[in-house]
Image 1 (tube, rainbow, N blue to C red):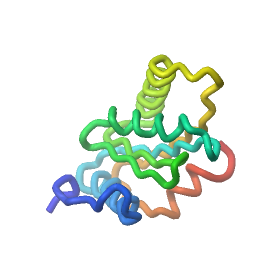
Image 2: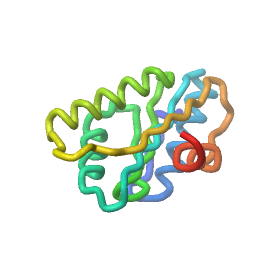
Image 3: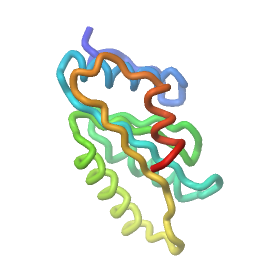
Length: 137
């Protein structure tokens, strides 16, 4: 069964993140397709961040995925894109969100990108999460 045809666990199930990693590895290995993981992190208690994450989720393509780590933190998997394309997609969504919902205060979120090159054999949580949520941007 191909990675695209596999059923993923429910989005609130921690195994969903592992399934996203497996999907990225399968697409890379079996279809020579590049993917980009995107880490989105807002300030704890910021009520706009969960709304933004729901907005992003509603705009994702069928093959893209989102996993919410916390109310203010999520990991996106964007398939068949490079970092420049992923940046363009996320920044367009952010600008659209701000223009529609017009936060009166500055909408401050940290967004980081991690490209997974085509042909990669596997992707692990240890490869992705530290790069998205710790260290230098």
